[in-house]
Length: 139
Image 1: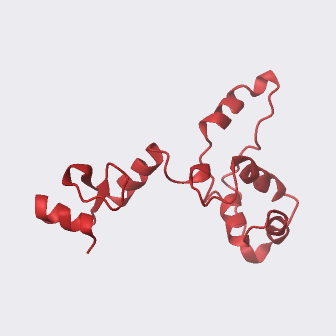
Image 2 (image 1 turned 90 degrees about the horizontal axis):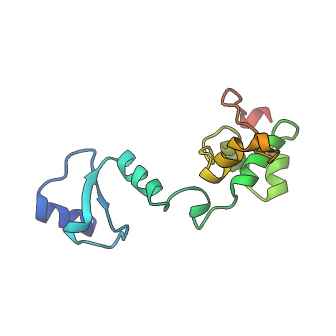
């Protein structure tokens, strides 16, 4: 059992099944009961996104950015997954995740503004096609 879960139990009692003990302070080592709250995994993920500490370019381990994700989608119409992966030095799995919208699917605010201003001649990213799925064996 982790220390923050033990701190919650000592202060508030049992943790209901399916619930996580989340951190308001975003310090995983923190055991201050005032900094902890119960939530589902979805609650924890929403909190992480709201605080800009999860996903996309805010993740210090990100290998690509929004522009490259959009370029990968564009190239997928004319190139094989293996070729795109080699071009960017990425795994085929990551390229497939980008193409199929499993990662890098949320359009950031900066790009949303580009979509809105596209009538002014500002170039915008390639529109996403949710109906297009690519399978590893087929590419």
